[in-house]
Image (cartoon, rainbow, N blue to C red; front, side, top):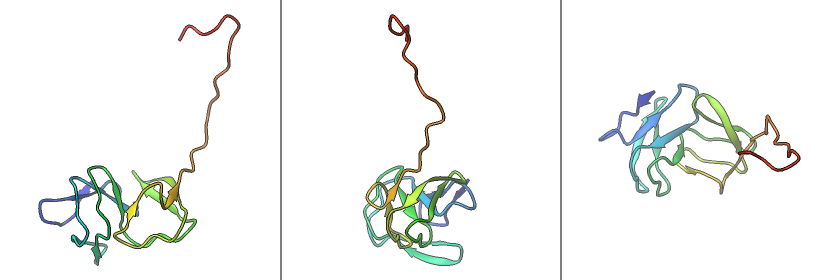
Length: 107
């Protein structure tokens, strides 16, 4: 994990190959930071735990957090833009299923 070089460390990079940063506090539009040598201007209001794009993410590209895909961009996302359900979709694939048993469940 890496705190971004910002006043009061407002953004967190969880893994080096992530294309999103995580807000450690509310951030207003216009806040500036640097990532990968490029300046990023935060475009939207984000709250604690929300994501902003670390670099441009093209429609269909994977959104990477914790070093793994958490979804795909449903449209082009600019660096500094809020990344959430309005511009990404989950790629969740169930890996198990629940089966009902006779007489109900003990759970």
